[in-house]
Image 1 (tube, rainbow, N blue to C red):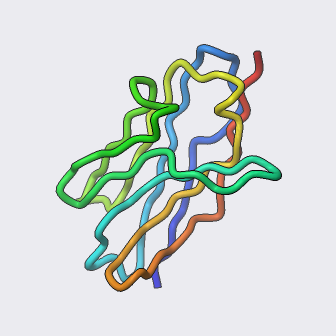
Image 2: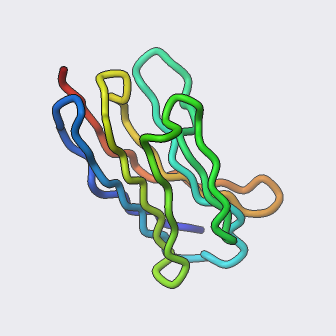
Length: 116
């Protein structure tokens, strides 16, 4: 089992910034990728950004150039720096860890609210 603890969500005005953190503990060996997803009511959960153990990032088109994902392997922590936030970024953000054979773990979610 992997436990994920998220922090850093909150309310911000449009154009502002937030930084999310997700610390992993437990059976953290063999983690392939750490990622952030988000979900708004009535919509499917969508991938925002992911990063491999080697540090290779990938982003959803909607956040490219505004969000930056990073990873501290020594601390087993993944970060999401979110800049130039807009109302469409309002969602519950979930940390995700992917291991071999399709095993995944999710954090409890943290609310991000952007007011225009």
